[in-house]
Amino acid sequence: MNRIALLSQRLANQIAAGEVVERPASVVKELLENSVDAGAVRIDVEVEQGGSKLIRIRDDGQGINKEDLALALSRHATSKIADLDDLENIASLGFRGEALASISSVSRLLLASRSADAVDSGGWQVEAAGQEMTPTLAPAAHPQGTTVEVRDLFFNTPARKKFLRTENTEFGRIDEVVKRLALSRFELGFSLRHNQRTVHQLQPAQSIQEKQRRIGLVCGPAFLEHAVYIEIEASGLRLWGWVCLPTFSRSQPDLQYFYVNGRVIRDKLVSHAVKQAYRDVLFHGRHPAFVLYLELQPALVDVNVHPTKHEVRFRDQRLVHDFLFRSLHKALADVRPADHMESPSATTGMTETNATAESPVQQVPLGLRLDENTGELYAPADDRPLSYPGGAGLASAAGSGSSGGDRGHWGGAPSVTSLADQSALYQQLSADAEIPPLGYALAQLHGVYILAQNQHGLIVVDMHAAHERITYEHMKSASDSQSIKAQPLLVPISIAVSQAEADCADAQASELAMLGFDIARVADESVIVRQVPSILARADIEQLVRDVLADVREHGRSERISAYRDELLSTMACHGSVRANRQLSIAEMNALLRDMERTERSGQCNHGRPTWVYQSMADLDKLFLRGQ
Image (cartoon, rainbow, N blue to C red; front, side, top):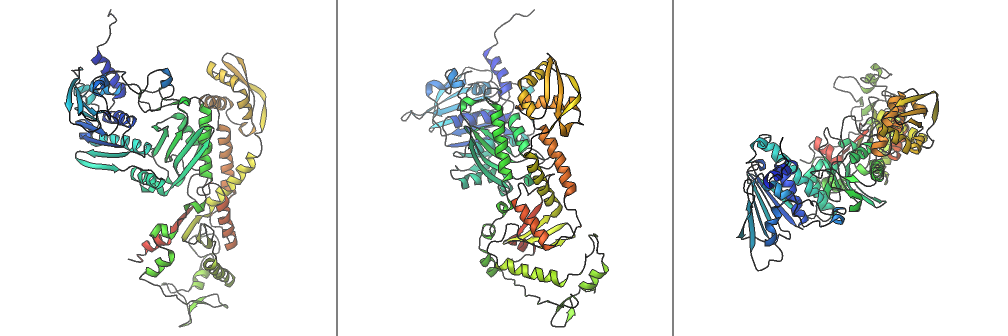
């Protein structure tokens, strides 16, 4: 039988490196966090061959004293915490003091630095390689700050090196690490070079405009075009950042950045709160995009629960979950069509008047007139009805089509009254100083879409999807004003559960009663259900109770009842909304547009599809090559 023995320092560091140093991107992450904690203003990152050959990170921070250089490569050596109180109030990104020791155990590492106190003296450097854990100290010419150079990563652990991916894949992960940190520290400048080629050159950002510029460089310009800036503070929590509209959903969660006190995390509680906020407006299988920052007292969050510090634990998880959900839900609900509209000056860089004046191509009015007897349009020059290339006039084309819901034919000839109404509408559009965001309806296309004109361009509305959302929101508001109706079971149901689930049913009895349940514990691992919400009376009661208890245990509450209710209301709204091929009058179309402007989340239907699209005059001019 083998005896118990202490591991050597080198082997212990290599075991620790298995948790800290998974791949080159892990090395970059740890070293960047050290630079940020050192108070750097600018950080330069240079890598070669995806980081497996070289990783060099230089900063202009406070630097390391000569006496501390060798100690910095020892395990559990750090300047960031000193006692238990510091551990419970962590404000820095790193705190364990394991990174440099773990990295040096699986690479050839050079650490050079010059502290801010060493004004007259030069810098110093220390080297260490995987097999030789004893560092060697030597003088070095170095400006204030620190440079860490990591060469030949995993040179002494070939089995781990085999698991590295291709050079492009590994560099893509490094690029993502730099992006995440650049979004968490707007006040710092970053540069990234790969194989002697500059990839990123990010300047410090202070104002909101400069921050948005960095967001656009990292997440792409399309992100900002569909993003809404939010800033909400309550109960000692502050949430700010950018959330994208549901129309800018992604097939993968690749544009989701969430920071807690400047630390990027991926947490189940946060993911659940965001998912619930987008539940009503996101298309099935799609993922939202956001860059959000949560700020709270360091003592209220534990960051020492994961080896790579990607997960955190909040002291009051329910408070944080409800704050995130309500903040995002309100931010998405408050978006109105007016928020999507941009002035022509913002789009084209000139006013509408200048845009028209500088257009080299001008169209001459056709000068068409209406024959009040026949309802036909004609040109006064030859008094002939306006005809299509096929030879038939508008009246004959309308007469040959069906008057029903056939989308491929005309629904009827334009009457004198409708044309007169539209003529009056055109005058209103030109004279109205306060045109609504969705403008005024012009026509209906194939009985499906409403064409409207606002001050800056063209609006196309899917009338069924828009009316479905309006009906759905009205039904939800009416339902929210009433309490959940419960129905007693004729025969109570006994369910065998785990002891943890039974404890939850005991502790959360009041919360379950608010959801319409009457659940009582009858044994250590058994509960009895006497009452359920009436809308779920025909559901699988046993499975429903298990799911609700699981939700309450995980998140402190359950949204299954409201989710099921919303699903029923959504189906009712879909069947009760105006259908395609129904002919609407101009007044009905305008009434629908005004309802959309007042209704929450009117930009998407109940299934997450967009209800309207907007084309500015500049966009339309591009289609017809005007001004080119």
